[in-house]
Length: 190
Image (cartoon, rainbow, N blue to C red):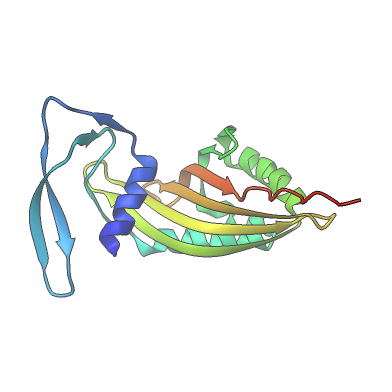
């Protein structure tokens, strides 16, 4: 199961390029409950970032889950110390933020305000560490339910990839979202 989560997590934030002329032989760890086995794999692509990951620090997942709880409860300032002094956030709608932690919180509060009630249903999370790049990440999958002041309900499936610096502070986030399609209104017979 870890292998599947690891593969999906890497696929979301690693941009791969095709390498048809040569196949790089890599070692992949597969685990069962008793032992670690090594298998040589010839992948059809070479990762442009990294393909050498291990399970990361659980404390980073804890930090991120506390951030989600503060987002839901509209108490974002409780997570202010979890962010680095300068951050970059790339959102599912195509917008990007790059700036100071204070500016990030001003923007985040403006984004959160119209959502009204928010409840995240967290499907899964996995802390990762890129062994060759020595960077820590947490990938999280969630379903976000929001209800605005007029009672309009929105449900989005989301996947986010968060990077943590050497001090355990968030400094980068990539967000991907899928809204459920609107159901057509049936015609009214007159």
